[in-house]
Amino acid sequence: MNHFRYRAYYKFDGPSRLQPFRAEKSAPEVAGALSRFPIELEHYIDRESTVEVASPQPEANVSHVTVVTEADRQTIDEAVKRCLDGLDLYGDIL
Image 1 (cartoon, helix red, strand yellow):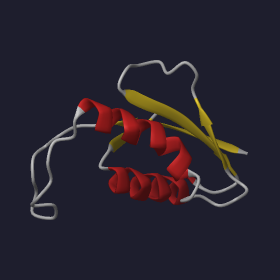
Image 2: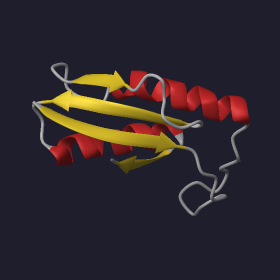
Image 3: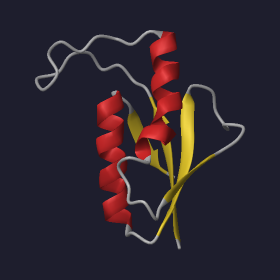
Image 4: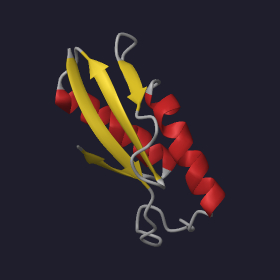
């Protein structure tokens, strides 16, 4: 089994060409998006994969998760990116 770790976080860069009406999230909106990240990520990966959430979270205002899967890194990286984009979050591979 492969274990891939990610850190999700929020950063406001202002509107962009692709998102011209993007507005800054409030603190409760950021917290909500970060708390939904592990739950929604499960919809982007295959059913045999699982998402484990670090408890307690090592940093404030971030969400650390580990995806346990038979899939390759590229497949999971793409799934994580789609999920993060949908929540207007950024992420790092750990």
